[in-house]
Image (tube, rainbow, N blue to C red; front, side):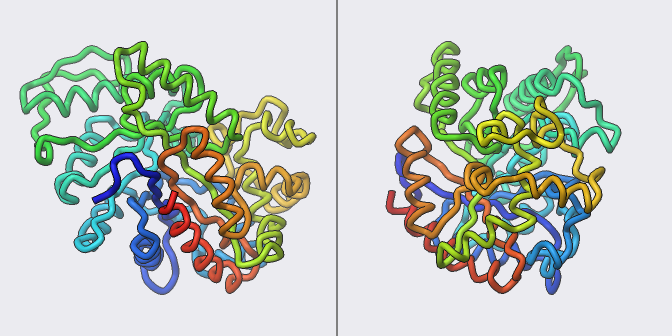
Length: 384
């Protein structure tokens, strides 16, 4: 049984198809979660990867020797259902981190999450947000008014879950319902927790009004996290909710190693620096550099990585200072990573979902060896 008010951790598996066995990374991360006493395992919902496929090669990333394709993402609901079947002993909570509100019809998302909740005996987490351009626009999904679509999708999901099998009719600009039936039952009276990936002012208000957990997925400095948390809690209070009932979570990208030199090699890698293209121009400016995609570039939400060729990505990566990598990732030895996360905890964080980017190291052996210090980080955080 997890502690009601303690600091909790989860792991996000990138959900990419590996060599050797199709479930290799799932089995590895399940073992890490069990050994590190983590509370949950998440899988993202992507069609396109965050790093440009043009640099996804062993000469740049050690991980490419194990995971040969940058964009071979598994469907998260299918993957989580498979993991649920292997989850009988540890019984991790299982979450999608996070799904789109526009690319997937909310009725289908409501069905998938409710199904996983039943099959996992009440362990499902529905992480949801407005999505990113890369997973929508190239596939014919309109990429306009994403926040308005998100709000309508969330209302649709909650309405269907509360319908008790009665026909539901609801007017909506994006997701109208006409005598819609939803009969997948709750698990012992519960539905999946809804974790909202909120960053901007409107999304923070919606998180305060509707979320079980606030789950920002884009890196942000500690003062920004504290400020956003306060704004989300104000929105919860304004909506008549107990602001402390919304769990403050975060997706945290980690680069670790057994020594500082090992960590420095990964920080300086092509993969770690190219990941900086996902970061907003505002964050770049704080380090005295302009984002190569423009001074007003918003970051991951508008990035189209599949359009960037190898030479372009390499030239952009050269512009990324190590200080920026250390800002958008939590980097260091286990003790140093713990220190950074303790600072977040002291500013409100209660649930850290860690994403291990240490395999960006150009030497696959060094990257894989970082799983041991990553495990030590999980164990350290369980003591917080």
